[in-house]
Image (cartoon, rainbow, N blue to C red):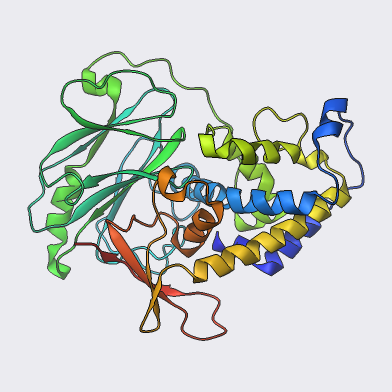
Length: 369
């Protein structure tokens, strides 16, 4: 999904957004709120920077949890997937994965009820972590040898609207800012013949609904969602369609109120009075101009992440809501550099561009002691 940032793709997006010559009838209120042609590029630029991580995250979720034909499918929602292997260049849905921490992951649907994540006791000399990252790409919590220790434990992950008290036995409650969230497990592989011990740890990772944990009847199931298919080609035709879809599961935080209001002027988000697709071809062309400018800004910001050390850029640009504090360019640059990167407390990332004309960077991660 990094490729949606290229100038060529924005050009294709311009072609896709400008198609058609008819504009739908709109209400007087919509006419008053939609931006002028002159205002549209700036609003679209801001919307693209703000929305890029949400759209990238949705693309990964679709590949991992929804599209069984994606070649990257792991497991349905609320079912953990363990992989007793190291990742390679063929694992393309997520940028620059580690090669010394075999992965497990689970996509959590938190709409009906919270989920309980249980971890086993892990030997003291083996690093492991469970990174909790929501649809905003905020790292909202960690379980693991650094964050919570190596003892066994049960942890509760709740959605943005959950109200309740955690039951006895729960060590900590983590709140996702979105209704869907990913838990990414990394279990250290100490040497090539160590994989059976990694598998033993992975077998102890368990995920279950709160009702099952309490041995109570399950609440009513959440409504069925019609998830739109997504691919690089489909993103090129209407980026804002996917952003609009993702926002319905992401209630705005205090620092998002203003930008959400500006998104509504483009017909994006809950409460809109018209749809982005109802804009005139001229508006859509102006929007594509703003998106092209946004792509350049994100590229430049991604290259600047970290401090210069012997030709490498070393650092981390990942964190929780407070870490970003409304700096949407920092968040977009982090997603471009490597979506689902860890907080600096958990890992730092050395990155380099091998030649002046290289279009991709080489990168690795180093766990923080």
